[in-house]
Image (cartoon, rainbow, N blue to C red; front, side, top):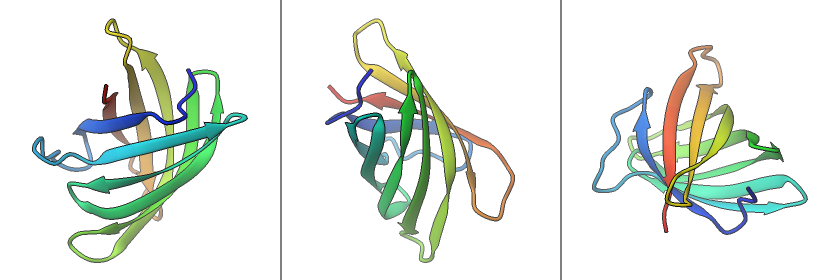
Length: 111
């Protein structure tokens, strides 16, 4: 389940409508169960995250700049699932700083 070097795209989110033509793309890196990475696309000009992986559970903190202006940050917890085709899927529950609303997004690995 190591995430090092894996790339994912967002396919759904309860926080916003996902633009299927330019979904947010995430690049993951991992060493010794510490994960970090970058993301961009859709509503985000650039974003960064860092956290840990414990088995199939990933916990991160994130921050990003918005295409509409401003910035956002927060925390998330993702469950790693293996698809029938061997690609991974991340089912993520996340919240923004200053807002206790829990959102859910799904990202699939790009082959």
